[in-house]
Length: 432
Image 1 (tube, helix red, strand yellow):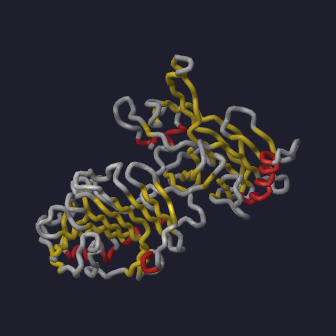
Image 2: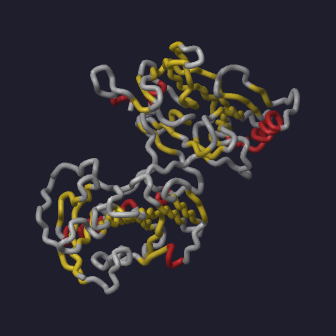
Image 3: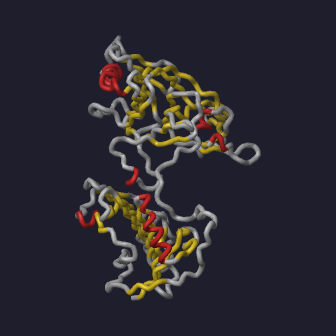
């Protein structure tokens, strides 16, 4: 079997074609520099490629997309370069098992198997069956199945050979470069495939800017109103903890953010919207909280970043993956990490055990999402718990000024609303 090998700067997923084809020499230079490029493997006379490989060493990433004769993707494989430069982790794979040539690509009825593997030996296999239903198990994977040797440039095998029924090693030949790359050309279109990015913060600033218009996808238009100040939080240790106060974390919380020691404002982002209330049979206007914040400074945040826990490795993140604190009681908190153990012990004694007249504990009796406060007399540190929309993992977003100082820490309690255009049809870039 003869397989043509071509190179390009990118691969356009929408049109299933390379963007800016390049020579093997230029691809080799990009490989050495860690810059992204793609390798396209084709069988002469076959319209769809056999496989496409994206290499981006600067992102610790190699991705593989496999296509069938109809041009449908049948396999995705993400490989990660970690601490050992000689081997790659098979981090994430998805297989689609089309039941016939007439089934559309990614059809909801198509059986699918997803496998996630981690360097410490953990893993998860999820099988989604035709007609609904799924099951999740721990995959039995040998070490040589979890890892693969890192080939040198130009020495990669056809990784999808078994999928395509190729038994003998194929004979590779260079594909003709039809279109020469032009220096200084425009950047790749948004439809081009790229290395996976973790979840992005969205327009967090806009949620605290009265008058901005957003939508949560269910209510078509919501207007941001003045943030509601709830109180303050004392952090004498200079280390903020953001976590579920009711989970056993040992001697430290899941997420911590260094700040200057001090007392800081706690407030809530709120939106007002109208909806038709069925049981009243009338239009009703209400106000709801979208996020809680510890305000460190009045300086506007120039950037937002997702806070990471001690075990979070961004090199392992798949597309839109989140990190944060987990909760099985729909509860989070801002707290002084230096007094974490006494503060959470007071929280348990007051809320869980219900000790009456407990010094260092109080319930907050209003319509705020902030629910309980505890304080440690010895250190002066405080904890303030807040409600989330449910269980699961909640990212912690850290806002920084143009000079890099922390100016605010935000938790979105029910997802990130989308910013609506201003009345002239364009969004307010400063709010994004």
